[in-house]
Length: 163
Ligand code: S3P
Image 1 (cartoon, protein in one colour):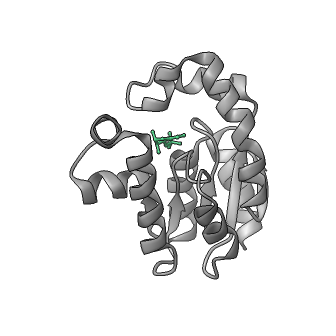
Image 2: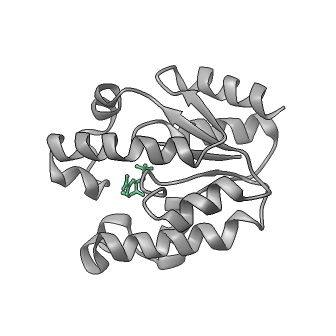
């Protein structure tokens, strides 16, 4: 199982919970990157820029996607590169679930988080990013799931779909 979606859609919280319910390992791709790089996400953005982070992100997904049956939560920008979108859609190990919710709700959840460099662009730009990414999440997933619910409810839906 792989979870995708915009920042604030609950990929990490929901993913951890579903992994628990399924008795599977849980891997948060951002956390995996921080561990393997020995740097925080903001510091990677600062020294390598967004494109540097994206390259690491793509390589990390490639490395783990076919070698684990863990529940994997991805960063919101994983759908930026076509290669990653194809990797998600065509992989043979995981069903990909897009956690979808209205922008206003997501923005309320994330607006004060200093650990998300993309937010520095401001409300308008983040809103435009949300709009531009939505079709990419749709095209690279197998199921779209309502993430405006509580994490527990969304986890329940995923569990039912996975079984
Ligand atoms: C990003 C989302 C973040 C993280 C990085 C970039 C994005 O993950 O990968 O800050 O471009 O949307 P979350 O979606 O878990 O916040």
